[in-house]
Length: 257
Ligand SMILES: [Zn+2]
Image (cartoon, rainbow, N blue to C red; front, side, top):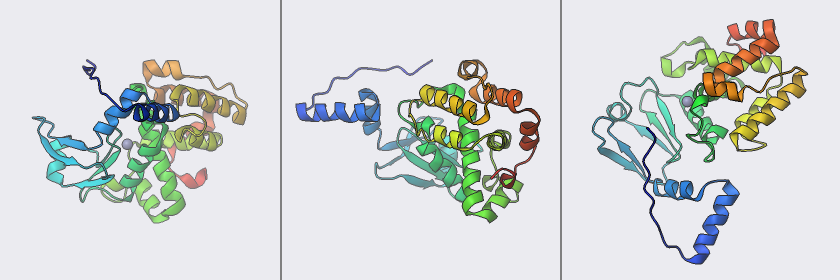
């Protein structure tokens, strides 16, 4: 069941109200969403079992490292070591269980189109797509800037928080970039053309068509049924065939970049 909402009225001086409306319009954000987010700027961290507030992070905090005990109380036995909380705009990390790649991954989440206020929490079907793409981008950053980290990440040499997460999905995006230009994917991920997900997606599909001269189908609707990642991967298989399947077996950025 979705969240239950209660409507509250609030009085603002006319100037402030006009400014608020203007800011929201420029951000493409709903006024209610904007105000809710402002109120939630102080992020309460709750115990998942009894809902009690364990601590409240002040608005100015952007990255916070939590003790392992607290982490468990909030997230249970999740394997994840980092979380980006889009509502509070904060990155949470588990102490002694995260590394450079965790920070990159969560930071990328924070600037991706999927975390944009106008898309957030609207598209459940994009979860795997988002995670795979974010980890793929993380790998690209490591490959370009921290080659030793990159090698350990892809070969899974160190504890699991240093190693590639979502490997199947990550390899899919790498293989995609081997079959067409990576630029269309980057533009889509960062919402360069539009921050509205369906609009940006259509731009992404037409860029693929232009780059590859193939009849790449728009699978957004199919994605609503089977998840956007699966629909996208199937279409890549159909269009790029053997080359795509071969590249997908490897996690080797030097084959593509
Ligand atoms: Zn993630």
